[in-house]
Image (cartoon, rainbow, N blue to C red):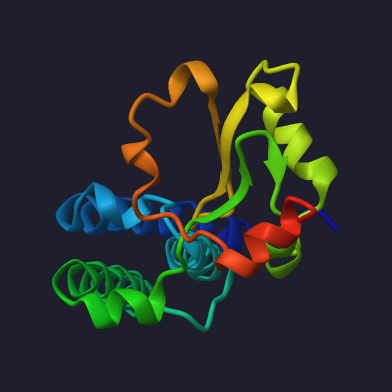
Length: 180
């Protein structure tokens, strides 16, 4: 069957308009950071907002007020999380991963890659996606906090100051990665 009743269809249409409007208001009030995908928590909140919106639309037992409250609570919790991370170094360390150096000066850091569960082929894929043909032409590949790869070619490195907050392997691990 394509639908149960016209009432159900009308309910979904009305709930969609109202819940979507509520989501827009809540997200606009909370600011751009709410939907940024800068770390794993951000991704989870974005997915949770979508899931909550779907539940509001399709689950008869969830009222618009309950759904709007759930959306608002997710956004408020995300706001508190982001604000706390900005103001507290300890909290930031607790909830956020550090970016990790996976390749340095054309050499794969195999210990760091193993800890992050990243393969050499994935690193090479990230390099190719930046239009770079030789691993030796890369100064750094970083696994970012959101799971994406950043690739710096030798010509883009400059002073290297963008690598300041990147976790580097311990000296012993770096030596092993270079085959020493």
